[in-house]
Amino acid sequence: MKAMVLEAVGKPLVLKERPDPRPGKGEVRLEVEACAVCRTDLHVVDGELPHPRLPLVPGHEIVGLVDAVGEGVDEARLGRRVGVPWLGYSCGVCPYCRADMENLCDSPLFTGYTRDGGFATHVVADAAYAFDLDMEADPVSLAPLLCAGLIGWRSLRKAGEGRRIGLYGFGAAAHIIAQICVWQGREVYAFTRPNDLEAQRFALELGAVWAGASDAQPPKPLDAAIIFAPVGSLVPAALRAVRKGGRVVCGGIHMSDIPSMPYALLWEERELVSVANLTRNDAATFFPVAREAGVRTHTVTYPLEQANTALADLRAGRFSGAAVLVP
Image (cartoon, rainbow, N blue to C red; front, side, top):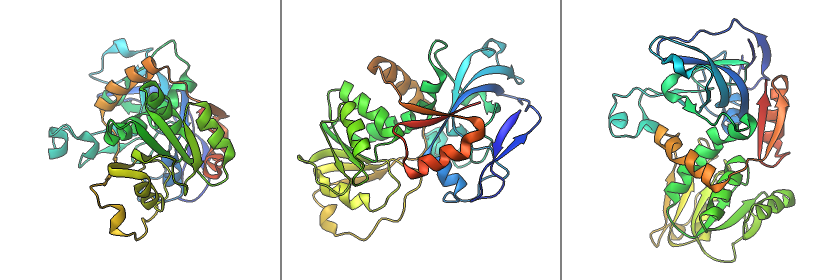
């Protein structure tokens, strides 16, 4: 197999030839068809998430075909298309797992962080965390749904049922969730980097009723806001934009420090909450909604060997939608 390997934090990935992995008990092996590139991959590569397992194959938005199964896995899964997300394993016995909060598991494994991920031609995954996907769908289009879609969906559910939703950082997750919000009959207000007219145009094309800079006030108070950009200074900006009793959801796994702010921004029963990881139930509820809503992901593809270019382009904001590696 071929893989793009992180050998040292802060260094470029290195193309390596490795023996084909073998699935163990309860595992499946995938021949990777596509793996989207997530901002979390940047956090891992750049060292903003501590203690990755090195050497490491990043990537956690994986779509592939099962070509081998381990002990205890139904052989009927051979040949099926599956998707592998960020949460790659949970213990099932800690208080969080027993309370249906496996996203907060005390002993988890994370794909592309503490176990090898999908920047490769093959990957081994826990069969219980490999979701069956549509065999007729385009694997490149499916890949961003495995994290940008799932985390976006969890964030939207945390945001509540409000009509006016603000999305801060209009990248892979926001462009998926915007489509679902429009389908649900909500109003989307898109906040982008200042002067990023291309991202604002993209948001309006997807049905946003307003698009502007992240430091701008929306024309109407928001019922809720979701922050996808890893920028702590957006927290007070979003609190300023939501109505009394509104909610701000931080949807990223990493964010720069939140600056000091006046209590008045939080007062009047505004709420500030975070989203951590995902659960298998998120997938069970999200994929049917995405199909019914007709979500179409906008992607830019790169060969596997150009993973470093894809990461650099994501870091610089050189494209709209999501980057996807194709082995």
